[in-house]
Length: 266
Ligand code: DGL
Figure 1 (cartoon, rainbow, N blue to C red):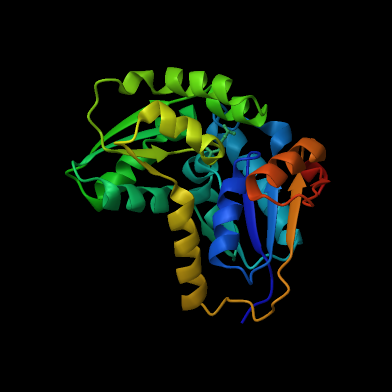
Figure 2 (cartoon, protein in one colour):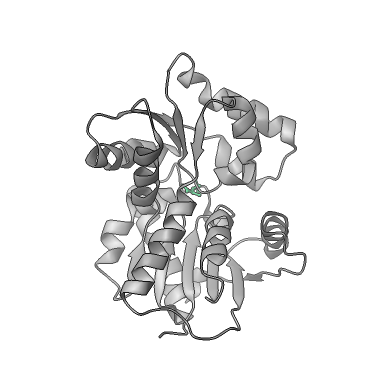
């Protein structure tokens, strides 16, 4: 048994999409989520910058005495996870391996499309992981630099829909049956993706499998909490008001509050 919280990090609001699935799957667990909104987007930064920023968030989570850390960010998983795994004792769980497993299990015609940040796409991490599961699967990867910052700006449905359509335009005429939301911000506008893609395409949100994998790891390593008083803390390096608004909206928790934290001065 281990009553310490689970730590989650993202470049910004996207981590809420993973927090949601983790709380649903592990209702007795406490969580601490930090969004590095002051430095988002990560998706067009250098690998070294992403490693340094992610290291600060990891340090913050360790100061909150977390028992394991989920990189609720595809970009940090692709660019920083291998390095940071070597630096901390706690287990670090990324989102790309789980998303790839879910995609490989979902496709019927062995054709998968992934849309993600330029860094995630440039790493070809999804292509490698999906092909590791099944080399027969054809993976089409598309970078969408516009989307994560737009989602943080909390625009209206129509604006989001137009941006999604622009972003997936390179996939026109591709006959994939499975589409991976390769950035944790994207589930926040999943309805817009569903409308732009049409009913035939199955949408994979890696967070579902991440929550399952986290559950499996905790069971194996005897990390479940035996408390029934789970608490959920939210921190951002940016504006705590708009961060909390996103959390309230996405998690359906009207009373959710967030605190500002300056990770550079830890
Ligand atoms: N939410 C992040 C991801 O999953 C990235 C957004 C960004 O900062 O570019 O990749």
